[in-house]
Length: 428
Image (cartoon, rainbow, N blue to C red; front, side):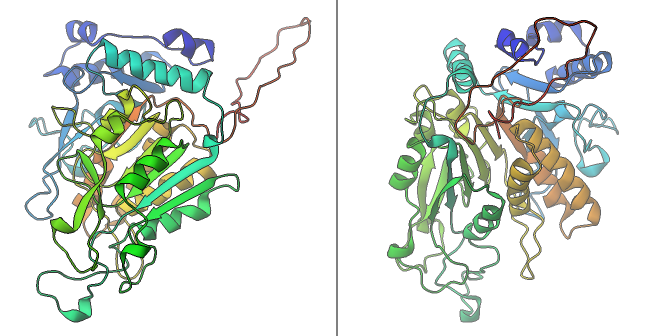
């Protein structure tokens, strides 16, 4: 892959973790990598992309101390590769071995765009690399390049209301309890050529008329829609905190509010054995705890090492996250991030997902965290928790690739500068 990167105009070099571990100082492996990147960035004007080729037990990840469990119901520690993106901070200014203690340690602007291939052995790295090369060099034909599949799940029972005064539950709130809301906010950003496929637990905001006939989100349909081939997939809904499954609502009465009302929508095994072949989407998961920190790899990282399909990239949270929706329409959490990501991707020409994610983090910091939100620790946890699985530099197909014609004169009479241009006919 190093040769392919260089050939297409992105100069690349492979460094082994073993060499970094033997060469650079640091209190642990994560700090050694960070120190190496700081030095490399200081010597290079072109350091832009970082691909960590190894799961977290092979290439260490940094855990940031957010301290959000007692008062806020989130997590205290969030595993994150953000540590390798922000090189202007050591993330531990007070030297107490607690990294990333809220905003005093945060480096809001990425110096490097980071992605990770969660591989554990030669077989997995071969699958992941071959998927990337095939995706860029010889993607399969078909209409999948235009497909965007959107899954929107319920967070609560839609036939239960606040006005009922139900003691077991606060009731259904249309401003925060249905992924349908953020899904519909994303749609206006989509260009005309996108073929949108929508699946919802409940396809409206106001509750009260839910029934099986209105529920189009289910496990079989989700798997089939995925395997049919997509350029993009978005999920907004519930997930199990174990990280191994996305969930959806299934109670026929629409009044059950406990965990039994939810069941598996798409599991790590569905990801591992997905059958979409080379039709690999970029997947954004607006939910909790489904990114790559479980030691048994039973999470959605399996999309990156699926032998018969999978995904070209996955954006997801390594821990619990916060929706941040208010009754008066203000948004400053998960769903703010979800909507803004697709705005960046489609309308601000940030079509490389690694770059889009870290630009998203920077904007979230500037527009939300610095504006004194009601729950700053929850906002900070969202900044830290979302990470990218995949090669951060690979652009995403959103239209059928076309051949590029290049015409050059037979000879030059004087020295000329040839500027590198993005090939927009190929990538969104």
